[in-house]
Image (cartoon, rainbow, N blue to C red; front, side):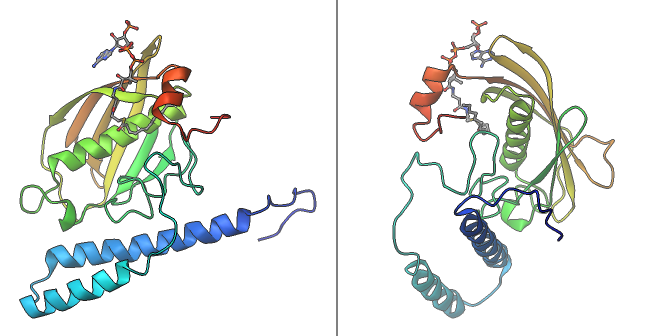
Length: 224
Ligand SMILES: CCCCCCCCCCCC(=O)SCCNC(=O)CCNC(=O)[C@H](O)C(C)(C)COP(=O)(O)OP(=O)(O)OC[C@H]1O[C@@H](n2cnc3c(N)ncnc32)[C@H](O)[C@@H]1OP(=O)(O)O
């Protein structure tokens, strides 16, 4: 890509952060493949034991410093930046579908496909997964609207089961605010039929006051 001469020099460490994100993303992808393969396999007990031994050896290779409980990873921005290990959007999380998010005129739209690892009823998504997808999209819609908040209420409505292995569309939209309260709606549909709601939700999110936010999130950077 052409780099204009006027572009400021990259910040120190930016390249290594990008390398770190790329490696995290790659490992996340491989782990998700392992998780999905694990829940689908009909391998024999001998094979499962052998694989379990191998996985234990692989896990032991992740040595060195471990992230503390409330530490915000260097590769993340919070609130409003990337969350590499989020169980919903994190490219590095084996738990995440992961959801990719783009802004719309009045909210956010998320895209993902659930696998058998996210199954509830046979062939369909777990209801808790739907709540997690909507909670995240609706929470991020608050942040995108300039009022980051935490969920205090999430009213779910399950209209039809969510098919697995089918591209999904998740919408999150702020409908109003009242002081620190933010009112948000969300829906899940398939990409193929965005007019048929499979799951919908209404939520209330609350922006903690700054002192409370600092107490809850000691790793929060001052500029955030
Ligand atoms: C830095 C940003 C990070 C943003 C972080 C973004 C991450 C997104 C992640 C996805 C979303 C999540 O999973 S979030 C994780 C799940 N949620 C949580 O763990 C939240 C747990 N709840 C809490 O910690 C607390 O409730 C807080 C901090 C959110 C708010 O406490 P508070 O600041 O003391 O607020 P409080 O005075 O009680 O209430 C403020 C107003 O809201 C009203 N209110 C309280 N509860 C409700 C309710 N269920 N439904 C309606 N209204 C309610 C009160 O009546 C009051 O109205 P009035 O008297 O003013 O009229």
